[in-house]
Amino acid sequence: MDPRERFSRTVDDYRRYRPDYPEAVFAWIGQTAGLTDGSVVVDIGCGTGISTRQLAGRGWRVIGVDPNAEMLEAAREDSEGVEVEYVRSDAETLALPLERCDAIVGGQAFHWFDLDRCLPRFRELLRGGTVVAFWNLRDHADPLMDAYEALLKERCPEYVEVGAEPRANAVADRFVDAERAFFPHHQTLDRDAFFGRVWSSSYVRTGVAEDQREGFDEALGALFDQYAEEGAIRFTYRTMAVAFRP
Image (cartoon, rainbow, N blue to C red):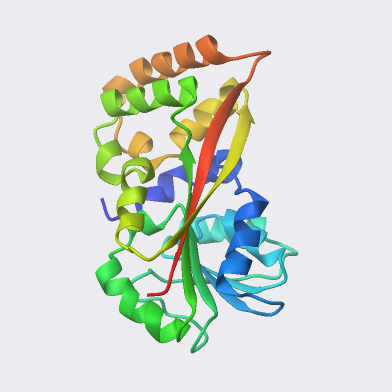
């Protein structure tokens, strides 16, 4: 499936159940990229605008970019009253209403990009500025996250091919001089929210066959029952940020 269209079926779950990012990530981005009030930041692969709105809250001019029309529509709806701009474009073309920016960032996105095609365009726009990729990666030291990882590998054939977990470090390792930072983060989810969070992932939505969905949901329910306390589980992340100059 074209990666630009994968998330059309997950928009509702994505906007309701996907996590935000720890505010410490954005403080680190500002410091690492040398951003000040009014700096222009492009949030590429912005999806429903979760990270875009957090970036805008730090006083920067933020432009959210995504190739998926349904995701951008949700981003605009959820950003009413927030001073952000949204543009429909892919990372490789990156058509923007400006000639330069101070930083290009992307949350949960860079593993989808063809970086060989992206980086020359990034250089044109940045003129020496910084790129920051960041991901909410599950903390595999947590028993629930470790068990969930095993379930994905067993039941979701697409997971290893397209999931952020297997691919984020490969993207980061490409840039040998990159700066890395890690931040703790988590969601507290009841049963419905846990299922919604899981089904917001494109490799679950498109990768679990119709005749296997009942069994997959039964396995999810068993995980929830095993690890829930007072009707909720803690979905634990180790958020990774990687900064480099292209």
